Image (cartoon, rainbow, N blue to C red):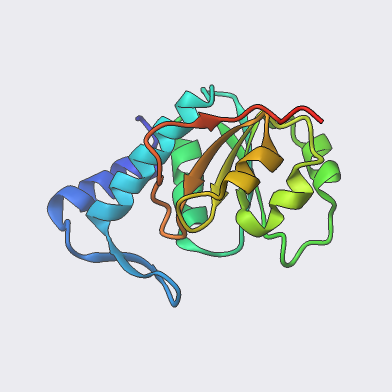
Length: 167
């Protein structure tokens, strides 16, 4: 990873692994070591979804540590992200996808119903308590779906894909 920001984070994680780095009222404080590890795991999940340099990724998350981890992971791969706080922006999901030719999107579990109707995005990383309910996975099928918690930690090592049940 050649991204300056990630190199800075990795350096701090090496020098002061247990120092506080990132926190929120819902997740508490995370250390530099845990954030650097979360960024690496997230970048690996993005690679599994086919994200490479010059790929486009949509980050549609509220201001939680998972959004910071997602942004750093995208940057570390040389990909481009558009970040939007869905709670403060009234743009529709279809408008957002049209603006950005995104193959992968970070979303919250509560937005899963809306994203079920957005066909363009082939893979989703869903911020939701683990594990993702089977009903949510089926709703988002046939896309690849990976779970991430609010701390930005990938919950499953492998992206899962579920076929939509026949009607």
